[in-house]
Each structure stands twice: as structure tokens, then as C-alpha cells.
Image 1 (cartoon, rainbow, N blue to C red):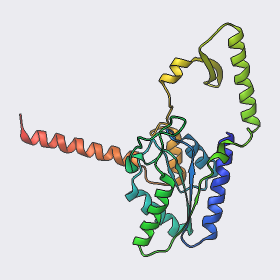
Image 2: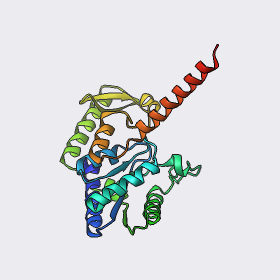
Image 3: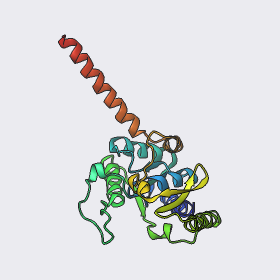
Image 4: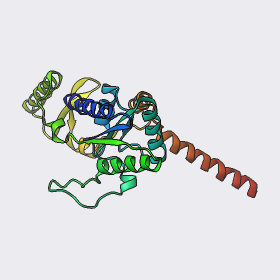
Length: 238
């Protein structure tokens, strides 16, 4: 949880900046998470200061998100937004370029979101001060805390025991809070892991932030479309 702890410090700084620029102060924090929003979600839950959390697993619906921010600012005088670096590809488009490490380059979601927030408030004839924070390497470069150091020790011991027992082609991890050996091909086949957009973690995020649920909106629209098609087919007859 070292990364989560460090991410909450960035969120706290964003909240301080937003509160210091009342009225209409907004802090935007971009966190790691090119394929999954675990860090953004857990940091949101840990801080309890976030009003809007955006992750790759859930599509961004600006017509819901921006009015939500406006309502939060009207109520509190400030707002805090957390966005994972991989969020918003459905709006900005997926890049075909790769970096030196072979990873797909991500669109600049943080700067883009900041611009969208400013444009929205300008369209409502309101001034807004947006402070954008990108902690980047600070989140993953800090020393591991006591809990993560202990976990690393357990995993290292398990790997050493497995190798000394003659096993190869495996890695180690926690499954149901137990240290286990996992075949590397199976791990590669199921990677990258993503957060369940209908799971409890995301439900908790929505409950804490009170933000509109884009997943629910999408499902309602799909159900409405299905109903309309059914009624059309029934009206057409056999």
C-alpha cells in the first residue's frame, strides 16, 4: 500500500490548493494506472477527499461528470478530481505509438481533462482555478512501508523455497491471503489485470464521491435500446 499512501499525499495537496482558491477551486491529480484503476480507486477511498474518480475500466461521460463537479463546487466551494493515466481513451483515442520500453503511449488525459473543466465553467460564465498535479515517479519511487516490506520478504522467501524444491517457470503471489506459486504462462495469459467496474471496490468509490455512475448509465441505455427493438419487432408481427 506504499503507492496508495504516497498518492493520498498528492490528493491532500490538491485539496489544499483547491480550498485555497475558493470559490471555484478545483484540484486535478493524475495517478498511475495505464490499464487498471486500482491505485486511483484505493487512493480515493483512503483519502475521502475526492469528488470525482476516473479510471480506464469505466467510460468518461463528460455531460455527467462536469455538471457533477459544478454541483460539488456550489456546495463546498472546491472540488478534487483523481484520474488514472489510462482513462479516457474512448474520448481521446488510442495511440499507435510506443515508448522506448515498448509500452503504448497514452493520451495526455490530465491536461485534457483540466482544459475540459476550464471550458465548461467558462461556458457557464464562472471563473474557475484549476490546479493540476502529476506526482508521476514520486508515487512509485518512495521506499516501501513496513507492510509492503514484510510482503516482499514473504514473496522472496516463497520464491527461494520454490526454486530450491526444483520448480521453474513460476512466480509467487498472494491468493486468498496465502503465498502460492503461479505459472508464468498463466500469469501472462491473464494480464493485465483490471478492476471490476461492477464490483464492490468501484461501488464504494461511487458511494464516497457521489459521482454519477457511467456504468449504470450505459446499462440503462442498452436496456432501453433492447426494449425499443423488442417493441418494434412485436409491432411488426410475425
